[in-house]
Length: 209
Image (cartoon, rainbow, N blue to C red; front, side, top):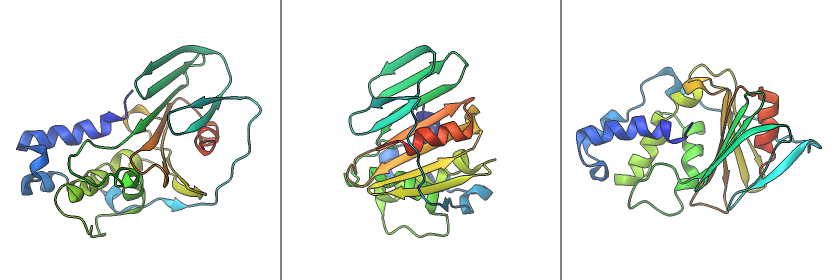
């Protein structure tokens, strides 16, 4: 299970029309979000987190996260990706991401990818042009993968952190989340789960520091 599933579908379409970094009119047209999800935004909620006594702490390069402390069948780690498969078949995936790999965008842009995806719509006009606009459009075009079929799409803030969460079942997930830290503008944290109940997933997501 890879976060890049979302981006791969979009980028394959871009490659079909030619040079991805050319930001042609055709490429921008392909990335026009045209589903009902494209007009939805996440609901802002109050941050609530109670520390668990039944968890273990994992650390990425820039974040720490509490995950359930229960029997594990397998752990797979590769570069910045970590996948935990529990013996009850629940699966948790954690990865630091810089979003779609687009050249010549501001180094402070990547952490805004979740913000655009969860809180902006096709009715919002980006100030950016060129590849910066392409970044914006890819974020909007990703909205169906988080809003489609979801009954709960939220975001909440705690100090420098913003937690974006969706209970979508798109692509076989049971829930998907992104966590952005305004102090680490070159990346954000991706957390995704399969067969995990939403309350447990929220506990994991909101534990991120």
